[in-house]
Image 1: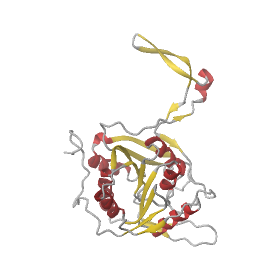
Image 2: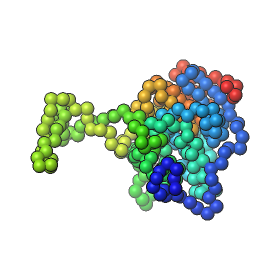
Image 3: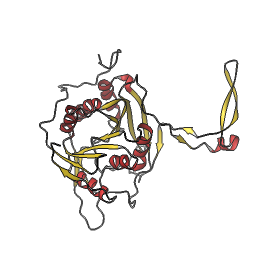
Image 4: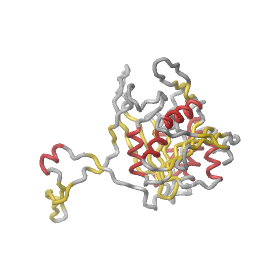
Length: 320
């Protein structure tokens, strides 16, 4: 039975399943730019253990975009004149190995959240169902908040199947009994609504307990409350935002998450920092951040990305 839920939980299991174990020693290089952000270069499991031991359990949002179980090495897409290099290796000894590694990190990330905090797992359709059951067993079924579908357009693939044009973001709350950080965002009103009602708020007219019709008020409508299907474009090959890092996500996606799920000066944590999108967006929106990545290519990409904005990441002793 889950310690976080009075109901029986569903447990994802497989032969020879191992319980999450700590990383083999702390090998980490700590980098910092200003007092609002810290970047760790090293194994994220070891760094998470370190953060827990130091009592740094004050994250309002944890976003993670882990490897997608592609079973291949991912290379950078450099600008003209440069050569590609391996950014990270996404190869596993089977699905069980992948889920055990992810589960070990999820169990520690949960400890780093504040009671009002949210954790958002960015996965694809190949593993999302397994990751959902794994996260339910770790966090508690009642902690699940929403599944967000990120829909995008990309160059079509030659396949006898429907084109894959979306990723999945699974959002969990630290404590279902605590009001979460939530800043409501809105989408534009539908053309048909604007044609009928204009930009004024609608009010339901109820008779005998049933909604009969709608009427308008004198107040301006903010729009339609944000839904769970987000149409946000991927980064264009010629975009200035593109770093060449293979798993880079658009700033517009992270900006929406940070705006909705945090307040200014809250802490945002990304244990798979990659190209640094989460960190860059958090800093731009006035949030504190902690980023972790063991890829030297990722660390160099983040340093270059921040330097382009006039922010230098300077190394400090790992013990500080």
